Amino acid sequence: MAEVALRPVEDDDLDALFEQMRDPESVRMAAFTAKDPNDREAFNAHMAKVLNDPGITHRAVTRDGRLVGSIGCFVLEGETEITYWIDRSVWGQGIASQALALLLAAVTTRPVRARVASDNLGSLRVLQKAGFTVIGTEVAYANARGAEIEETILRLD
Image (cartoon, rainbow, N blue to C red):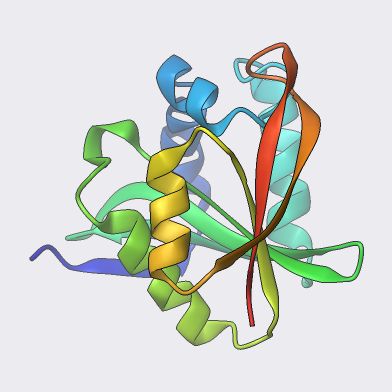
């Protein structure tokens, strides 16, 4: 099995992360994305904020030393939430599950919440496999789909 690891995000990672986060199929699946995934200035501003906020944990995900995504957690409305983005070229290989397990071992705050487009079955499986349980749904506007869609809310206690 390939070795999945987490490390701090480096400036040299930003080009690859930008490309991953603008892949049309990935953007559609994630649904709740930046208004314009092709806006590099907005991406740079967001990443500068994320990487310089001590309250946000943001890590590069590597497989055998190669950057394949990012994962992190942040506090929103008093709740710790996780987020991740895995390069579509490696979907279905267990990388998201391994990265999530590594992050949850390092960030011991509980409960932790996650949100996912309800039709994103792969991400739902990753979260439930890690012990997250569904606590509800809500309808919200998804930039990537230009419409309101159902979002599943999960929690790990």
